[in-house]
Length: 363
Image (tube, rainbow, N blue to C red; front, side, top):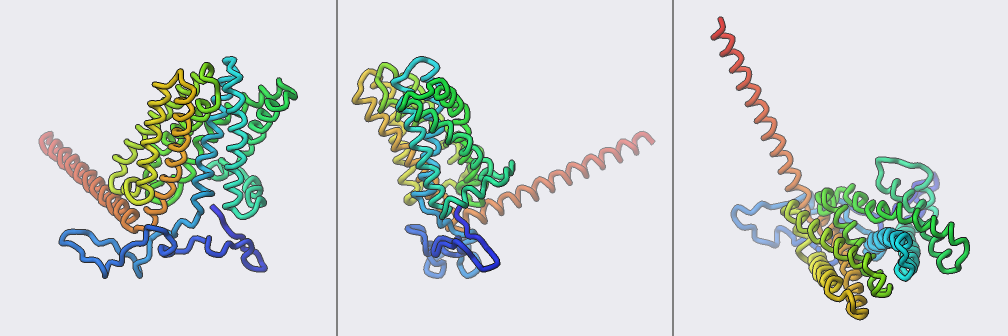
């Protein structure tokens, strides 16, 4: 997401070592591809090679701390505002208060991570000069601009007691924009050529929204009194179920492209995410009356959500490094298109032959 500017005086704002270079696979930790000449290819096994054994795609050079942290904190902020607004409306101040503070802290950290990736704040401001409806990054920037002040006003009013009416209205406004904040990063990463992200475009929004709801629910369980944390527990359980089911479906539908979600560092993170998320949901169900169990389960849900975002990030890095995740789906789509065209041609020929036969019979 970080870029440099090309000016008349040359390139300005370049980050040495952070520009996307084709074939920079050696920069990947743990995903360096074995040289085909050094490996014996078995009979019948397809060999995936590219020019000079370079990856097909430009390699991802974003820092995991910036981008995966940006994804996690944004989701936590948006879902926290939704829960806080609901707590305000239902008279649960003990739940609304910490979630408003969480929303402000998380969105501040999310924007800081994005700005750190961009290199300087002016680049984030420049993205607000236009609104391009077909660009998830442009729409997302405006969503952040609408959401951030509302979350900030709600938290400041809650902390100081100043203008409680406006603070309550701001909290409701943040709750209304919160779902968009929690969900827009999914189409943002799916709108790329990275196979593990792009191929998961159908389920990724449900994964991110479920993960965000589980994280916010976990935060509410960990910080609110047990007597007021009922909505947080329900959000945690529903979010965990949605995230787990969407991940299960995504990995099976994507087929071979889902391998990075099961292997290497990303596989380890995704397995940890599933264990923490399911364990946290079980704790939310069974430890409703225990302050200690609620706190531990809430922490597990937060950690599980973070592992999901970092696992998705690293799966994208691994899939971009191996040409087969780009080439094989393209070949499959080409073969399916050819088969469909051949089927249409056969049906058209059969229909024409049937019409000619009917004409001959009538005559």
